[in-house]
Image 1: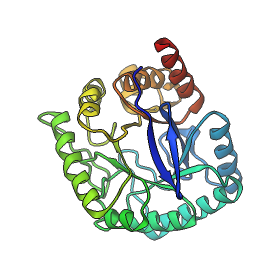
Image 2: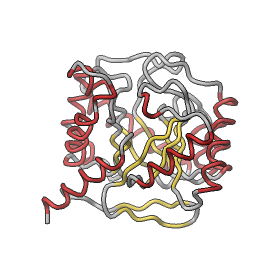
Image 3: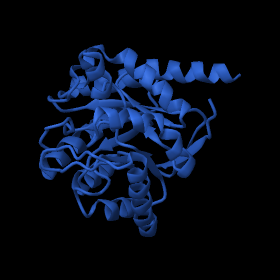
Length: 280
């Protein structure tokens, strides 16, 4: 596996990833699509955060609103309170952990960063809140730019791309230009598996990821964990989708992905280690 190390600035310190990074998912919402990622009490939040780190996660990604198809997003003020409280709780006990917040609104993003979070992970690519990009620039924090053509009201699907890679290329190029003009420095790219794409488009995107990684030097994040592109073709539930997740994460790594966002850090880390061994 050919891997280009990358760096990110976190609270004034430069962090270098010499292997693909593992981002562990911590949902503080009761309605996540996967039962195993629902943690809504302080005790459960802390316990799962410690478990993610013990299992090998390099980053903890905290989400207060479900983004599953058909979900209603939380009002920004309610989401802001939930995220800020969770970040404050985690930062008090995990002072060195790298914390990302999964939000598409500028108010929760700002409140979470002020509470001690490090990275903003925006599933809307700045499209649901016209203040998001300027907020990221003002806060001077790393930003994860995701491709998404869904509507914010009900996360409805928008499908029928003439060429999915062509659409992503234009989307990323335009949004990166805006972000860099505003002064944002650290940007990661997320192709948005499962968002406004059919199962077939998701699989086409996965197998053509190397086209994106050859065009864009920014680190590419693959968020495939237990998603419908795995369990629907197999006729199984998300609970049974870990083997499929490992298989598709392997493809993503071989196609140039440098961050894996997962529910299960240890299998992801083992996959990375074995791919590295195959090159040695």
